[in-house]
Length: 107
Image 1: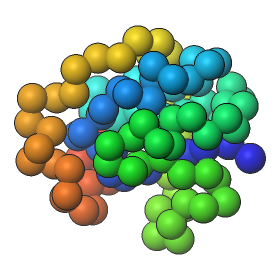
Image 2: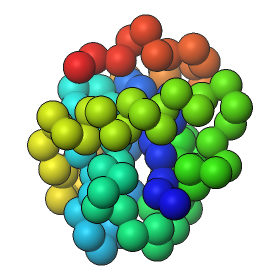
Image 3: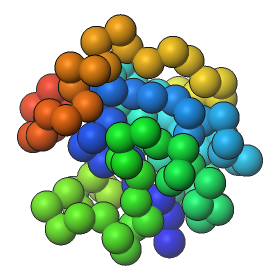
């Protein structure tokens, strides 16, 4: 089992999770993070660090967001690793509670 970053991360992109990852499995896109399923060791450390609760165990991804499992795997192959925490976007407060953000994902 791996962990999956879901829709809540889009346009929020907090990187607190990156700091605690012992295997550097996070990949960074323009406005979203993903977890490389081939690198994730299922340690669970990232889950508690995400302020928008965007990270789930693969088996616990909400039914309406299961497509994020494949999306994480796909984007992890093309996005570069992120290994250090960065400041979140300046407008993060505007996006934290917004739903249905998949259309805003920048590749």
